[in-house]
Length: 121
Image (cartoon, rainbow, N blue to C red; front, top):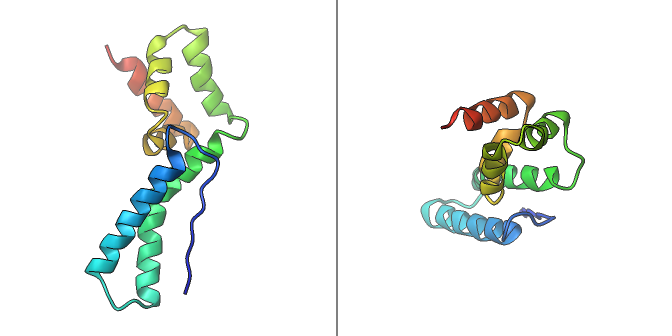
């Protein structure tokens, strides 16, 4: 039984390298803690690793495609209204794919993120 995860392109400072290291450590923990190493183990490992990898993969993919309308609204708010809080929050989270994917994965998530950022101080 084989499994694999390949992540490109690179976003953030060490996107795929950090993802690979984190997944390797998680898999090592599973190997030490679990057995037998059968199909059930492989499924549990794949599920656990995908929970870690999915937001990184989605965030990376979002950076190579034209932004959807709701992400464009984030950019517009940061520039058209000259609200530095939005731009600062976006840039501050750029290297945190789980947080950023959570903020842009849907129009509702983007609106919630914008409200949270603009409500601060």
